[in-house]
Figure (cartoon, rainbow, N blue to C red):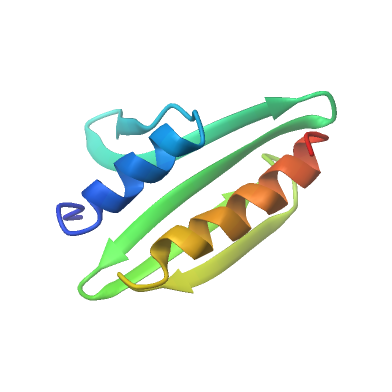
Length: 92
């Protein structure tokens, strides 16, 4: 996956939300965030295929949501995913 066209937006969003951006998992390049709260933990990750960007959020158990994004909506979609993740984790 090539993240170069979304990296400036993702990195700025991570900084603004005080989240650690993971960029490597095993031998793969990724874009991922983990959240931990009193009710559990969740992960937000981004996949890019061609011009399509998808943001996923899941609670490491059974709940999962996905959101389609493009360059003009990515920040707002990440905000939506963060709101869902925080709700699942028990963080307002």
